[in-house]
Length: 356
Image 1 (cartoon, rainbow, N blue to C red):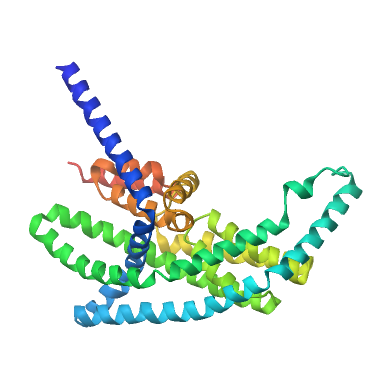
Image 2 (cartoon, rainbow, N blue to C red; image 1 turned 60 degrees about the horizontal axis):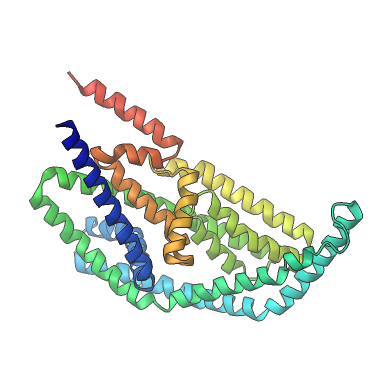
């Protein structure tokens, strides 16, 4: 009997494992089609809160949908106009930045040599080329512009997703109360996470843009938007967002401005990330740093650059689903940060107190 159970478990494990591999391979093969769909899912999660809020205020579902869609279209048009100008200006100025960057790099090499940290003719210039850094930045912004061209498809998918959410909840009510409770819990946690993350990311982006404009760094709106986007990636995102802005401040304005820019990023991300966000977010809605890093590698490998941006929202959605079901709560705990441990302990104590 025991051998039979072990055999069934082994077969079940390998079937599930093979299915996961097939799904991953399929997603990677169809990345160009799947990426806009995942982006639409991300936007839908952000828009779900306002969509439901308008309905609770007495607005009919169709009018709520129209209001949300107009809001998305307006914000996208505004961002597209401002961002398009900034990206175009940055690409036009790339030769100037590259020249200044090369000059700084030569001066830095001479300084290292004078301190004895670097030998002459070490070939460091051949191994690390500042021009390649500028080129990478340009290619990233070009890719971002190409993504905006797919926005019409994304917008259409968002419309259908928002309409289907309400219908999906109605269907779940007919199936079972437990299923509805799980769906409500998942939607509530997703709404809390994405709503809070959007607000804190927006505050971060605005503070960064205004601060860089005061210092005099070129294209402050571009760096503010980048800070907004990458703030959805905990721990790592704020560092990635700071690097191009600090390098540009160094090349354009000098060492003092680069230090000021670094301090601004540290203060803004430190206050919002460590003080404001945890209070608004609550417990059990965090991911461990290792999971964040691995998810960026995994989704980046499957979907490319956009996959790295969507990695944390996608992984967070999976964690929320795991947390909402009793059978998979332990997986959600393993994916979480320290707050997940506290939440898990409190939940166990609460269950024990309820037992007779």
